[in-house]
Image 1 (cartoon, rainbow, N blue to C red):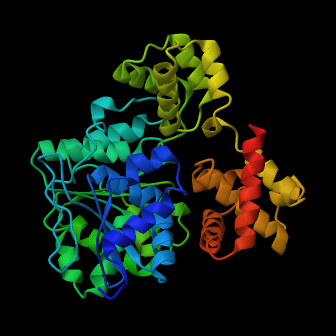
Image 2 (image 1 turned 180 degrees about the horizontal axis):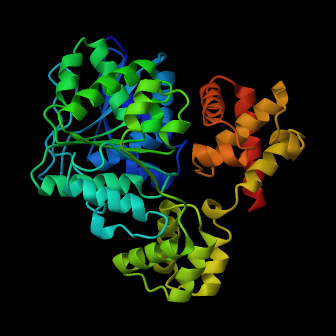
Length: 440
């Protein structure tokens, strides 16, 4: 390697930077135990303890890690996460012999994501029923099965549940996210080893594909996925795809790929209704053995309305509070704690703060005006809603005037890309964040 630092030293420097860019809990949970393994052909390989961490880093922190490494190394590069020390007997080590890094067919699924632990309600009943039937009769009922819905509504849970059921029946299963698929495909092309990457998907009984919407503007990857889909489908492989929107709403997906997706069953997981939220809280409270009374759970279900992650986050927050203070959780304590918790505060604060900062009328920010100043304010609002509020791009597009998903994603990426080189923009965002923090 011609770089002045080894991969291990470079990643140690990156971790030093990342400690200031993510909160302590996220750093300790997802990044602390990672190590730099290798850096060749503009691909930086990072080892992590298990597949669950690899998935989270790919889904939640990939762009931040890639940007941090690019600043240190002075060039753009791809990032790959591999499991160095698998902990469960079902997971086989990832292998790299100069070709494409691939996972074994016995992918390590999250042990918590099973059918028995999936809380069924009116909002997800059809998707649950279709997933269970597909797991029992792969390729014989709904093929492909498309499950779409917003972040934190249970799509990935159902994919993992199908995976567990399939492995118990001795079937070969491949699970991939769109990010992972894209990264491995790009690496395969660079190494002139696409055939090895293609072999990952044959022979296979079930393909589980997550976050499909991230292929929306990747033409070459879409084309490869189309041929992979076509081959698997004609070989009676069951295909299950999860996405944050229906195929017909993905404007940058090729028409022939979209028609393939729509030839099966397209089912939606709707926003969680009160009864389902309460049932999830009851189940997780029992699981964690938390001494929280029914009245308190009902209050949390009423106050926290977005997704499962926020429901579980509220319980974790209260659990930590009781352990650290020694106090009991009462409805009064819950009201005080949760109404001051930023994770469940309304996004209006972020939008209003951005509008005030730029002296931009709210109706103008949410309207159709596209002058430079308004566009910048809108893009910063999208960035902060994503980074500070952890809202999905679908949610952001709705609250910012029902805009196109691609427009919101473009604005977010533009701000993210400029932050490391534009000191004025960085100062503006820090000032806005300070105003938001002062408002709580």
